[in-house]
Image (cartoon, rainbow, N blue to C red; front, side, top):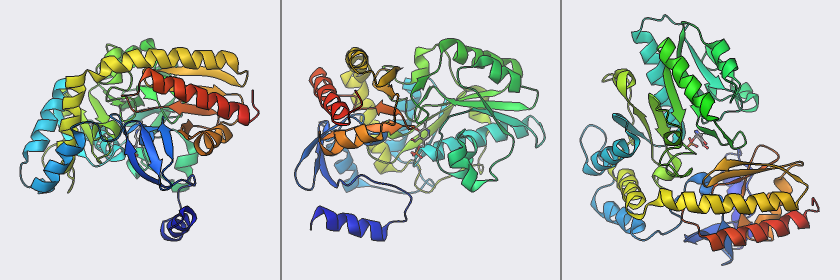
Length: 400
Ligand code: PLP
């Protein structure tokens, strides 16, 4: 079947909420994807920051296959060992006290928001407690997550959402302080804003929010769904700030392609929900947890975070040089292997040219920003190759 026939079938079949690139991927190896015509693509998007270990990392596929042959699902009416192992390892690397496994990032956020609401209810704050979130944030597409997502474009079609969510300016501590009052029960933010354009939190900003939460007995919820799992060179980005959240979320690279996320809590937040408050049929099933457990083993055994720190620095230098070469590049931000280049013009044509002509997968963040979230196992040679293909794509688009 031709590529066009496959695409036509897809467009007739799927509910139309995505605009997709005209490429049909067939398989992956290492840090490359291969389309149905056998063409190789260098992947600097990693399925939107999911494939931290790339494709077919030694031992990972085997661990998943083994679990498929053993047991895939039982429900949470019973215990299963892969979930216990994955949970213990996640608590160990995060220093949190309790974990709940979800099927996705947005469900992890739902759980975190429910903890905040339950915490407020326990404190008998009434129904008018507030959660502070950030403008230009992204926390997911389900209605609770959308309610804390500071982006009119995503929110407006689904209004009204959960009430009593207020939005501060990211990296502006005064704007957060101004929203705080005795009814504030939680602050939620991404440690590094991803979709919003790759904006790392300033250390003083995050530390200031932690202090405000402590003063007002409010929970600090950090969304590490995109920036966590080694991407910044720390296991979780907040660990590089010396600031510990009460609640955190993870997903994406946790399963390296298997759909698994989690919310984790410590201290008073770890006790806020009680039996009957939350649940999930699939959440934490043996199959996805065997994958997460293996991912966490590989991270520890191969010191993936040290590799990210080294390659992240190399990527930083190469992108700085690229910024100096092209007037059209206005800014460069990020940390580890989560970096962004901001263009003075829309970046869409460069992303499309890179994909279709240079066989380089890049993803955008906002209109003008190219986001670099490759597999964490890329090498310096991969970075060199990416930069040379990206430079060619920029030139081809005539936006020197
Ligand atoms: N939070 C952040 C920071 C994200 O980047 C995303 C997805 O891109 C989500 C939440 C939602 O995760 P999911 O798409 O798995 O529901």
